[in-house]
Length: 391
Image 1: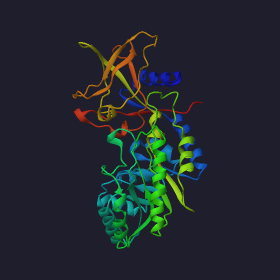
Image 2: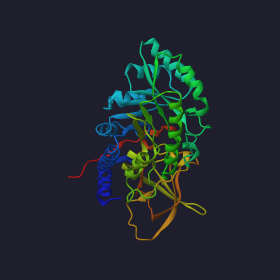
Image 3: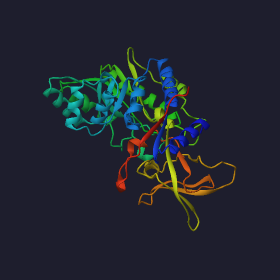
């Protein structure tokens, strides 16, 4: 972590900022957004920000200045996107369980597209649109059968997942669409999983999309839009040296392997890759406890502030920014105060000798940190703080 960042965090705490809190570096977020727009712009690709990664108002308002499109998975995300500056005409609404009320709200906002995930959902959106005398743009979310080779909880493109429409269902889908006059199919949507750091699954996705496109051509159906979702991962182990994914290689891969039809537009839905590295969960050590075989560093942050390690067994780099790293230290199980044995951020974490009151930084928490916070054990929701742009 940069010394200027450490100094700013310590200054906040010295000025009575209460831990835990979410800390965001807006300058890194800005650099990340510029890299995305530059590299996607080379090919005319359109990137929608996935609000599920982080829906902090200040973060959203900043992103919407660079990426006018939003990917939403609830009615409230659609509402939040529009309120924070995203263009309703560039909002896509995905999600396997859209309620009637959510569909109605999105129709009232004249959003760009519903990404549809089941045959029955098509019928319901058609019904809701007919009641409003509207035509809803839809894209079919198709399971391409591509294994993302990531944690099974965040793999989404296989037949056994709850998401999307299976390829073998497509003939029935097209038959049903003929009887749904208030729907207009404008595209196909794919999303194979999350935290994908090897680009090979994306190459496999491109090849599968090419095959599916050929099938639609055989049915004399030309679609204006292809949406390949998101899923690009970040380096949780090296958040400083790998502060941004390789966006140039990512977008180039789709240019090299995905065969777009004339006048087709390619869309992406990036979330984690945009915001993960700009966020840090800041906590303080409450107690250091010596176990039988383990030293415990007990923090004032817990799974209520960052549930990913408990939910996915995910890794986050943990740093003690109060103590000098002189090569001498101990292994600690870094845990929180919640009354659950799974409330653990990391086991056998090498840290300098750690004491009560030391400031602990848990890195790469800009995605799925604050947005997944809970009040379990009647905890207060932790506030957010921002490091402004350097002079």
